Image (cartoon, rainbow, N blue to C red; front, side, top):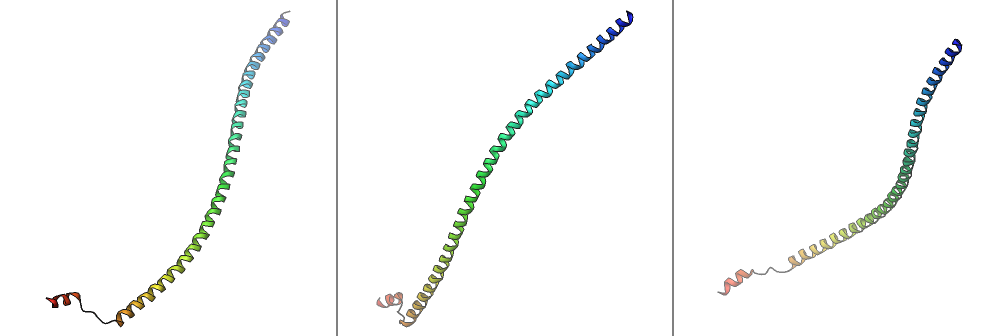
Length: 124
């Protein structure tokens, strides 16, 4: 009976050690599951943020395309206006040159008038 008692005591000790190891293992698994739930929540949040950023990026690309088209149209219009202004300026310069030539010719053709001061001094 002594051997049976020793074997039973040894088995009880081993069962107690196994029970303690199982308790520790259960605590670690619980912590791992809690961490896994937190990770799932974090991944869900990140997926939502990724979807929102993708939508924002698509909207930004669309806005950039529209701005590019509008700017391109304005540049074309500005170049056309620049060309038109160049034509108007050169035409204006030609007209001014003709007027200048006409004024010089008119001044050369008319006789010189006496100055008003000389005429006013002679009347005294």
